[in-house]
Image 1 (cartoon, rainbow, N blue to C red):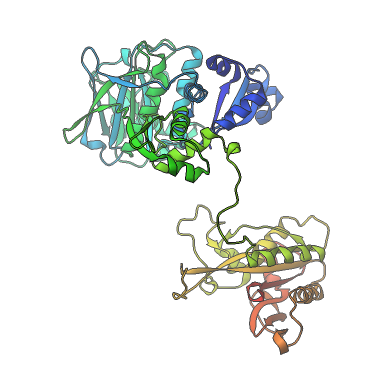
Image 2 (spheres, helix red, strand yellow):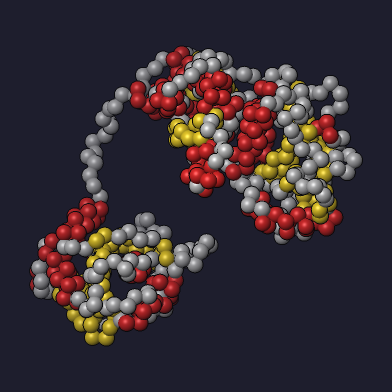
Length: 593
């Protein structure tokens, strides 16, 4: 969930009243948010960099508020305040309007060269806006929040904001070779070519994360005005010529990207949040975008749409009994203007351009539940005849965990993914013999396959804790994954999970008798007697590449092989960077259910 930081005093001023921390925490909960932390800039810097660096930092109290990932309208102070005021019924939801300019409309022309890089662009103008330092900071912060959220770190959409009074339209969005693009970027004192900029920003802590988006492309996207002045080189950097300041009165906003729908949503969010500060509140000046095929579109769309939901559906899904009129009132408090129509059971909901998260009727039902209050929903028993019970395999697992701990072994929990080397080379096996499920696009060599045995995880845990007092007695009960060719299975997916129990004993002597004794105790707990008769268990001499010759046994229970135990081979111990002998036991506990 994104976290929005707002100054407490500024927030209370905008809300028109003050709250105690507890009261505001409760208000956030009622609205479906969470007050995550109460801090200050000084406290944040002190935690991250120490008291010396924090000297001189601001002591202004900050509220860090967790916002649902799809509520883009709550990612800034303006949207947060507006949402809370509507929720508390102090104001009515504003109506956002797109207006045509008195003079010539600003035009953005897209050329066909952008098609293979970032083919889409939308634009709008905020006219006669009045910034203060706090409003300006919020404007910049919203862009950054959107970039990290819906824009997917600028890969899908990149936002450019420009002082319109320093530019001359129409604007051209095109793509050129990096060597042909030259301009003075934001916060620089001289001009650079695009190639030079990419090299400079490789060491920039903020911008280096976005270079890969266009770095290897033959052409880079760029936006010019009619005089050849560069507005921006999306998605990397804006030009310094058109930078906005606190004194900027007219803002030209362009959003370029690879996702047309998200670009339109991002533009709508920015203009609806900050049109509040325009001379004509909540009005946005339209801009025309001409695509390579000659078709022309006007943005922002600021589209309102209507949805119909039956009141009985909302009551059924939420588990309440409210009249349609009350439900319409609840939805109106959630920024969804609603009214009862038709037969008295139908509710017509108006979805504003700020609520891009409303996609389906279930989203409307969720908002009704939030407005009603989760704590106000009466708890009822489910109208079913089934009795909940623990999954048998998990129940057996829990029981074994307790008794393994009682036997003096410490439980560990290791990663379900590991490297090919861990389950093959280090254990003396060929990877093809392991029947391992491979990850198609592993991000790191440490997570290439799903584990086929729990043993490597335990040995790596011992290697990381070699300084601990001996002996080390560890165990784990978790799933392993094996390729499965049984296509007759109803839930066939090409692989199957098996619940394994693995234990290791690490000391100056191998301790085979310790592991053998543990096996006997486990079988006693599982009510499996020794011997082959009456579904008992036996161990038979066996060999395995991971075990010392002559020190390995296969475990048979109820007529089938369930695992192995033995002393690990010195090569295996060495490959896992261990120096002492080690015995291990690994069995499949599924057959004992």
